[in-house]
Image (cartoon, rainbow, N blue to C red; front, side, top):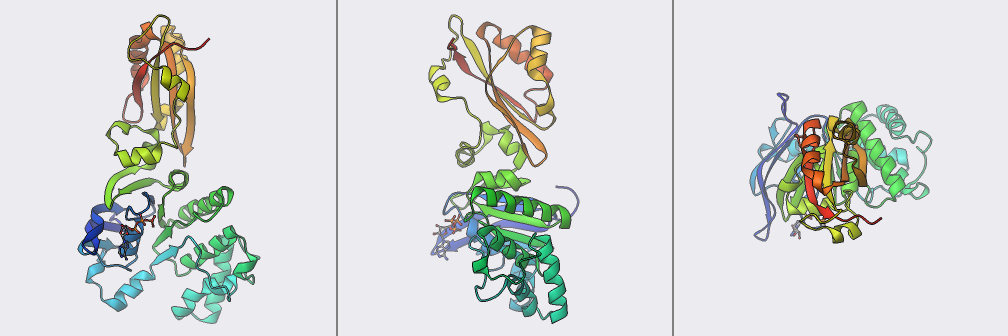
Length: 355
Ligand SMILES: Nc1ncnc2c1ncn2[C@@H]1O[C@H](COP(=O)(O)OP(=O)(O)OP(=O)(O)O)[C@@H](O)[C@H]1O
């Protein structure tokens, strides 16, 4: 990370319950304005990490530094003030059903002692920000799930927090609404420069919104990587098994019928199958066309494609080239920019393609 001091620093944080560590020896830092996804399976320790960060749990070991302040050094009043610098967004919205959207949003401001006029001004501003200017007087029961979560986000932002913590914020929503809520979070991040941490068990959520990904497994931090690199599988070989298994359903993969036919050695008329993982600028390189013009080798695209994580192109292509020219094709692809820091090139085996 650059010279700017981190907003969040976890230093070897452990939290135990009944002697069993829910999170163990966790260290990472988050810079201002980053969107960080924390992913892991049920019981991996995500909620515990979030609760420690929100000051709702105290670590047994290690330090959590937020904006230069060690949370463990703060007494209860200072900790309460700190908590107001953190906005929390919940899976089930946690709105008061007897209050309107505007009243729900204004509640933290009322508790913080804002005047009625200031509350009204800020609430109007927030309803605009989350795209609900005409829903101020609606009660939660009159709002859709997505609208309720927008109110939840507006409430979390009311006191201008330094950090927004989202705990499975889209897990109760359908895919289309999830998409719009994640777009809203990205928009808020871009407009306000707000740092966001999202806890989720869904790789698709991380994929849609995060700049960086932390993977938790059985209380340990097993991966801390830029999202684009994670999805380009550049370091697939070095990735933890927990990460690979979370990724498996996201990545393009060779169709099963071809995997079944793969052999380690070439056969008469066979093709070598190459997996080309591309990311960054490499995604724009016309590698297949260059391969044809410069070597005369015509690669067949078996599967795969390029997509985007934020603005970052990433992809995986599965190519077939005649087995007797596989070495030559690999050497050329490497020369064109494959197998650098942002791309990877792997030979999966040989296959006799169906006619
Ligand atoms: N208050 C608690 N008392 C006892 N054990 C706890 C407590 N909170 C968490 N744990 C245990 O710590 C481990 C991590 O739990 P945590 O809720 O942090 O995981 P998670 O990744 O958020 O899971 P989920 O996605 O299911 O919420 C689990 O084994 C859990 O049973």
